[in-house]
Each structure stands twice: as C-alpha cells, then as structure tokens.
Image (tube, rainbow over all chains, first blue to last red; front, side, top):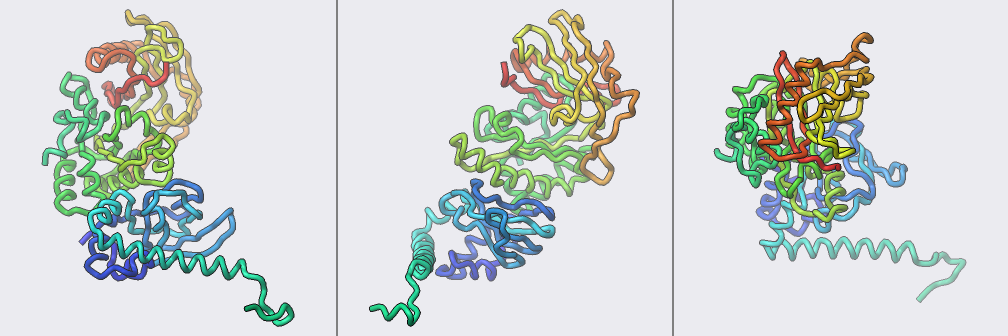
Length: 153
Length: 270
C-alpha cells in the first residue's frame, strides 16, 4: 500500500496522541520523494509546505552554516510547515541519496479540518511541545542557583 | 480514463493546463507536434502517490510513444500559470522508457510542492494547492532548435524574431549560447541574419538525461538555419497567429528535416 510506515509515524511527537487508525489515515497521504546526494532538501528561511520522514539515507541539519545534527532512517523534519506553511527554521542537505516520505500542507489540512478528534489530539501534542519549549526557555533564562549565590525561594 | 489522453484530445485547460491544450489545438489544426499524451493534475498526483490503477493506465497510454521521452509540466491552476511558473515546475528531458515516466511524474509533482515553488507562490500571493498536469512527448534529437517571437518583443515591430542554436532548444532557453539571431518581415523577407557563438549543444544521451556537447569550432559561428528553414518558420508563425492569436512566443525544432512546434504561448514581454 502506498504511504509512509505507520510505526515510524507513531514516533513523531506531533502524532503521539493519535491512535493507530488515525495515524494510518495520515500515513496514506504521504508520497515518496527522492533527493540526490548533495541536494538541499529544505533551506533555512525558505517557504515550505511539506513534512518529511526519512526512509533511507543520511542528511545533515545546519543553521547559519553551522552543523547542528545528522539525520537518518526514521528521523523527520518540517512538521511545523504542515500547520502554518511558515519559513523553514534550518537547512537540511542530503549527505547520501535520500528517500523520504513527504506529506504536504494541502493533504494534511483537509484531513484535520474534517476530523475534530484528530485536530484536538494534534492541539494537545502541540501544547505539550510548547510547554516543553517554554520550560527550556525558563531554564535558560533563570539565574544561576549555585551555593555561592545563595538559595532562592 | 479521460483525464489521460493523447495530445490531440487535450482540450480542457482546467484538466490538462494551457501547455497541453495549446499543443492539442496545434495538432487539431494540422501543425506538426511531436507525438505525445496529456495527463491531468489528478493523474500526475495519483502516479506520485503510487496509485496502481493510475500507474497501469499511464504506462499503457505512454507505451506506444517512441522513446526517449520528454516529461513537461503543464500548470493548470491559474491563468498564464505556465509562464508564471517557468523555472519552478520541472521538465525532464530524455526519459528512456514508459516505466521511467512514473518516477518522472513524481518529480514533477514534487517540483510544484518544493520549497522554492512554495516560496514563489507565497511571494505572489498564491499559497494554494499546486495543480500540475504533464505533457509526455517523444523527445526529438534536433539538428537545430530555438525560439521565435511572431512580433518583435523588444521594439514591438511587426516582424518575426528568431533565436536558434544547434541541438535541443534548451541551450537557447537556458542562455547557454549566444544564439543566431534572425528577423523576418511580415511578407517573409529576411531582414537580418546574425550568427551567434554556439559553443555547446544539448543532446540526449542513451542512458537518459542530456549532456552539454562541445560544438565543432567550424560550426560555432556558422548560421544554423538556411533560407528554406527560415521560410518554414515564417509559415509556422503565420499558422500560430491564425490558431492562437497575435504576438506569440514559439518554441520549435528541426529534426530529420522536419519542423516541429514544441510550445506556443503569448509573449509576456513587450
């Protein structure tokens, strides 16, 4: 059956609240996309309307020219574009021939709009991700609490 | 499957896009066009999605075409979309078999959904689902090819302007050569023949794709069109104006001594 592997999608945080049947509906909307070694898959600041799950191959993530991470089979990127079509937050370059499953904003949007339960679960996943991000920001912004500076209440 | 037809039956721009229907119009009016088929946006998307019925039907429709093949996008979602999306939607030259058309369709579909195409669409206020049909045609191996404006696009003068080079016309379109430059008045009289500097020619290669081939030095500044061919092009300009209207931008090719129309659209510069 065409589409992306359900098990791999169940590992994507955005889809974490969905049951298997719901993930299967999303999986069927994916299409295979191939990139050549060295090809820029997505570019920081560029518009985007697709989310990708890597089926095989390797890629690297860069921001401002600095390498941040490496990606391989089962990794994914671009999920925020599924919601807002907004600019890409990093650049991803194929380090080998890369086979991905891609899902576009145009296919994902109607499914969510027609299914309130899926929409609600996605909101819960996004809220959880937002809370995690906020906690990270709070942690980074907080002054050091080492013994020399005394205890804080 | 009426959303996948031979080019002569492509008549609905809402299904197949203006490029496919333009070529269908040409065939119906007796203008020579390389044999081909038109695929609707839904068929292209179905093939990209791996729909087995669609793949089977497309493969059967394409199979009679002589290979190699050219797979060209034909945008269907906005007026003048072919011109608007020139450079955004992919064209694949020298696809070597009917089976290879299917991954080519996926590439065309993704090219319309690529980040660069989406960025362009956002910039021009078209953040809508891209719909892209496809024309699959026998790829010519032309002796010479290029573009012709049925009216001078710079001065507006009522004369044909032809730019020509050796091999596939992509060398002219992509600016890889300084093409020969010709002007012909409305009566058919040649007003100007100016040789270019045609150092490369784009040719199909047997394994698929194309290659930039070095042009022998004695041909680089030799005119690639003779007077008979210029007359044929002048007649093609007249036919295109009759079929499509005035001020057309025509892509053409001479292969095995025969002139073919590859594309005809309205001049977008004036």
